[in-house]
Image: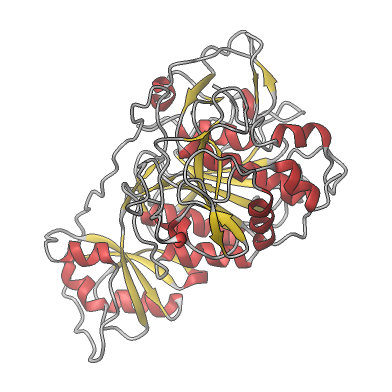
Length: 491
């Protein structure tokens, strides 16, 4: 989880893959011919693995991957149909055997990842100015209305005042839980429904998801001490997919895949878009410790590229590993060059809303010599005030709790830092931009964000990268919502 406490202490929870014992079966004899390649992490693991494991079997089709997994003796866990991938469990011997089965193109490890904080950040991004002065294509103030955002995280408290709509009901229109996050899922249904009245954010890293969701889509409110709070898209609807206390690749990919399968009608075919709009942006504030190389063959890459093709923007926190440009510590999936997949660095607005602040010292840098590893854009992620509950573990790490707006809302907002907080600024802004131009493509959204970014000068110098200027620490600069929205037709 890419989040940090107010004073820079890491608010990370290390997440490790617990290997689950499964019935041992005799692996099918691998067929003759070349073996399908392995991901780097799985190659390292197989040589020492003594217990069963979960892997992602990529095939020429989902059916081919499923057949191959079964023939090798693996037990399927879930299927990502549109990208031809099956998650399956078994022994190292069975994993090796599946590489030789017909139709298998790649085998990937179930790697552990982690979730990646005093102003709301919306002044520096000019999101608040856009909300107050611009109008979208639907004739409403530019607040993300008519759009749903998906938040893949620890969960959400749907009853928090930040998520109440004008009618008093929650704007969390779908509340889901990825039960394959800890490899405990049964059958092939990894994503289960939870009532929209239930808090799914109560486990070991509880509060992270509620805080992130509040940054993306929290309601504009004034707290009891007069502090103004609110997210980038306070008019958007919210789809929360809780991965719980443990995030592994299978659980996270299952959540991404659910969005791929359901983004057009996230509440079901019978629910009108006026009640439950299509999902147009997904927030991912998690990733592996230390960053690393992007794997274009991963299931994550396949799913997010298909999402972009179907009109959905995927947003990634770039990570909290700092750096000086001598190594690539950017979050791997955010390095995907596919237009409409965005990686976000953390900017420090100095708690004043200034647009001439600094790159956060903790924000992960790309390799200075390789622009493919650089973040795409920056947004406020340092000392961000958002929805929290003091009884939630991550929220308790913040050192500036605030009450309100109601008399009983004690410690309902708190300050946390991290690229986890920067990414949802962009996720909500993407919702604003789709409201401005519903027909926009993910590539068009990325292009306008990069072209209009404000070139604050702190940190590394900007250099030409394609049609833009960018840098290894802050990407193309600080997001500017007003400039971007005006180009897309807001008025």
